Amino acid sequence: MGHTELINGRIFDIQGFSVHDGPGCRTLIFFKGCSLECAWCSNPEGISRSPEPLYRHSKCTFDGRCVNACPYGAISLSNNGEGDQLTFNRSICVECTSYICSKACLSGALNIGGYTISVEDLYTRIKRDRQFWGDGGGITLTGGEPLIQPEFARDFLKRCYEAYIHTAIETCGNVPWENYKMTLPFIDWIFYDLKTMDESKHHHFTKNHMKQFNHSPVALILENARRIAREFSGRLVFRMPVIPGFNDDNKNIDATAHFIQSTGRNEINILPLHHLGREKYSLLEKKYSMTDLTIPSKDELRKIAHQFSSLGITCYAGSETPF
Ligand code: SF4
Ligand code: SF4
Image 1 (cartoon, rainbow, N blue to C red):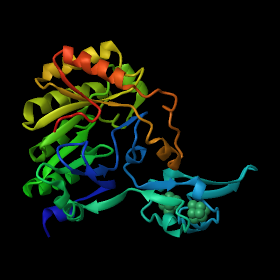
Image 2: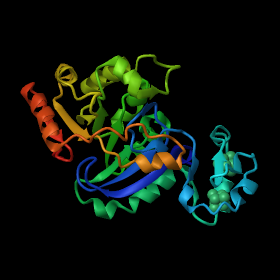
Image 3: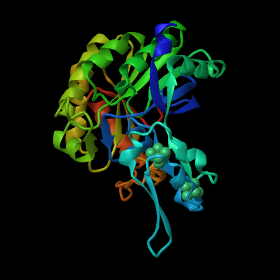
Image 4: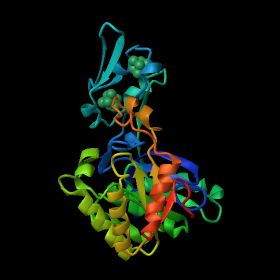
C-alpha cells in the first residue's frame, strides 16, 4: 500500500467551477477545522474539526426518530409551550463516530456537516473535474484552514503537483511554521489573509483556537507571512476581508500596506463583508453577530484600493484579481 493511501482527512465540501480563487476554472476543497473563528465567517461549518449535526428546524416533523437512534442520548425533544423543540448536546457529538441520527431522519431536517476521506479518494474525485479546468485551472484548498491538517494537505497537494495540476491554498496564517514548510514545495499559489494589524481588535473579533500554541495570533500571522514571502517562489496574494469598524480605518490600511511592502511582495485582494453564510449559523444553533453591519459599498472599496495604491501596493477589489 502506498504512503498516500494511509492518510485520511476531514473536509465538508467540494465545489467545482470556481473562477474567483485562483487562475482559470477550479475545484475548491473545503477543509474541516480552523485555528481562528472570525465573527463574520461565511463557512461556520468549517470551524470545528469534527463532523457535526446541521439541523433545519423548518423541515423537522418532530417524530423523534433521531432521538431514538442516537446511541449517546445527545438529542432531546421537548415542548416549551410554544411548540416542539429539538436540542443537541454538541459536546457529545464532537466524540461521535456513528452519525446515525441523520440516517434516521426521513424529512431531510438533519444532515451531518463534514466527512472523512482518504488522499486517494479525494484525488479520484477531483480528477473527474480536470476536463473542465482548461489550461490554467486546478484545485484550491480552502475551509476552514487547510493547513490545520498538514499531513493530509501535504500528501494531497503532492499528489496533485506530481500530476501537473495547478495547486492553490487560502490560509489564515495562524498555524505553526512547520505546517507551511512541509506543504510549500507543492503549492503554486497562496492567498494569505491579513485581517488586521491591531492585536486587540483581532482578539475581540476572532477566537484563537490555537491558544495552547500561540498567544498572539497577529505576531504569528505576520511572521509566517514574512517567511512565506522569502521562501515561496510562487505567487503570493494577500487578502483582506473589509469589515466596517474592524479593519477599514486609515491607520490599519496604512499599517497593512507598510507590512506588505516590508515583505517584498506587493499584491492584496480586498473582499467586502457579506452575510451569505448567515443561515448556516442557525443550522449549527449558533448566533451570527454581524447582522447589523452594513456591507461596504463599491465606492468604499475603491477608496481603500486607492489608499493601498498610493502606498505602492497593487490592490484588487472583489473579484478583480488578474490570474
Ligand atoms: S452526531 Fe452522533 S452523538 Fe450527535 S446526535 Fe448524531 S448520532 Fe448522536
Ligand atoms: S428525525 Fe428528523 S424530522 Fe424527526 S425529529 Fe429528528 S430531525 Fe426532526
